[in-house]
Image (cartoon, rainbow, N blue to C red; front, side, top):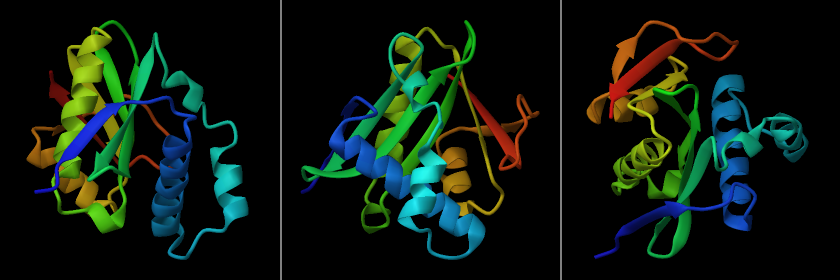
Length: 159
């Protein structure tokens, strides 16, 4: 039986970088309803503040399925109580294998390590599968805690 392993990894490690590029292509392509070009991915990742997903105020994890880099996600400490879940992504070929749950568990552990007692996140309404994952693992809709052009709904969970 193939199993998931999800461990902290630098956001700029080769597998993490490839996963972040795939994440951007996936969410931007869904939003734009067309394939995303390499130049658009480069532009989207430029100045995306990913460096904040490192100690001491954040963390980044890579999930591997049977040794293959298949998922990633980050957590960012917002204040003494809250951490934000971000860049949660499972490559399409690995969806439905338990990676989303393994990823959330690892990211929640990272948030606890940072001292957070509550996890929050924002997402878009069109990301139905992601929203289903969050609610399946105990996240509930909360009032907006931030604003931006790609934020339609906010979730939170006590850790």
